[in-house]
Image (cartoon, rainbow, N blue to C red; front, side):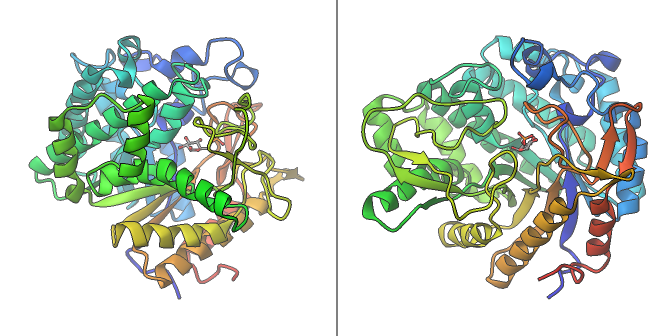
Length: 471
Ligand code: BG6
């Protein structure tokens, strides 16, 4: 089976990870501009001041994407380029930049798929309490409306937020992302609710404009599986999925939070502060989602914890948390299994779990349209005789595209696949040593771009609509 003609083969990036130009043309400072300057927060103190200078080289980059045959480019808008102070006066040069980028994509027939929030928050709002402060939601809605009005004539796919679980948990539980707070479940759950409320309001505003495009949001999709069939580990699996899947997908797609989690948060006093009006808006917005974006990298293997809570291990090496850590409520822990394959960063490689997970989603949420908005392999690519031979990436993407195909065969409604990432970029915590792209960027040679083996491979996949994939 080939992929249908209207299935989009894409690749993704995010503003902070590629743009650089951190203070160019009136852009305001962001939480990440500040956070990465705190000693010890990132690998070798790397930051996105220059990144890969996509802001100034976007024409060259989009031309390379076009040469690869890319059908869609997912990128994010840096809020602080549009509103340097988060709200108030608009910076026209920021609008101009994204207009130019969008037009450059369209020149080659590349569909722009635009994320409004991929973690870089204007510093002024961070200082007011970021997503803990409900005024940030109002500021976000103003920002979103400006983007819809400025770009919506040509952008027909908007993603409101990227991976709430990551910026909320790393920001308020692991302390590894801004604002660097550790072990504060009350704040963590509050942030998730405020973001879902902002998403709901943004969707409602977008629909009022009758732009006839599609809007949704992207979640991490990390299904949990018990290490064996014992009742206690099956319980751990159910519990992990309630907190990892249902808490995130239910409010978006069903318009209500899962009872199982609510009850426990009430008992532990971690329930977010929400109003009936906010809950009603979340309910009203649920049927308005046009699609759901899934960022799939790996599943999670879980085991029931017994005994005293252990200290959490967090390292720069593993932004999503080290294997072996217990959940915040000490119900389960993640496990590295002997018979599984892992990347150099200990992320499990499991296209099979992707297929199983997609079926779980279909059973829970029905036929919502899905885009795989991220999937890819973080690796240190070998350079052999001057060529970047990223064969493991080719194998990884080959197997995950086969998984997507299998999902489609089983009735899951998937309309596109975005590899993470289009081009090598700044890994939030791992600097430039963890690569994901089809295009290599030489940091020792003026950021020169170079096509990797995977560039040619993906071009072939797109041209043949998947017929060249190895089964
Ligand atoms: C996703 C993010 O969580 O994972 C990306 O949306 C990120 O922004 C990607 O780069 C890979 O993460 P890491 O930590 O390996 O760079």
